[in-house]
Length: 153
Image 1 (cartoon, rainbow, N blue to C red):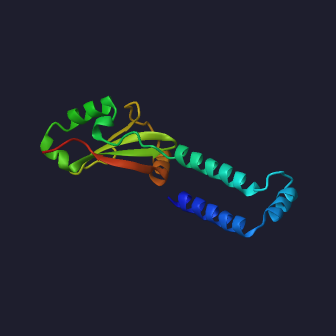
Image 2: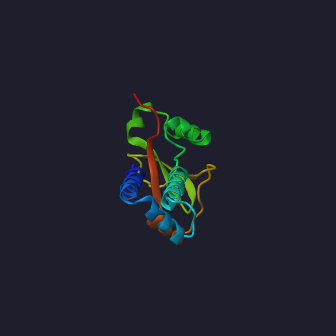
Image 3: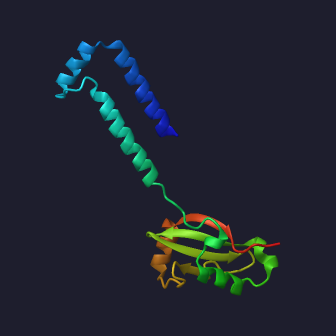
């Protein structure tokens, strides 16, 4: 949205200046910029806005896990094994975590006494980290999303 406003401001500003300048002055400006175009800023604004739009649409970080059904099959199976009682669904969730460019899944229910007991990488393996790596993880992990672990009543 901000990009659109900035582009509109640029286009409006250039329009005002174009209306105020005579064609002769614009040709002088074109010759100063070593171009034969009478309106060199139009091409510049068009190209720069195109680059901004392409950058804005391609740099979006898309989260592939938006719903419970989109979680990997091995994780859905593990959830049904660990949480067989559907009454506990309201206090159980899956946290999707990004660390060092990899995705991890943390399954947790509010009545469990251990934290990161059910912690898995994208392939379903539990990380075998030493204490320094865990400390690094605690300090630099990013919570991407938290989803309910199952559909309760």
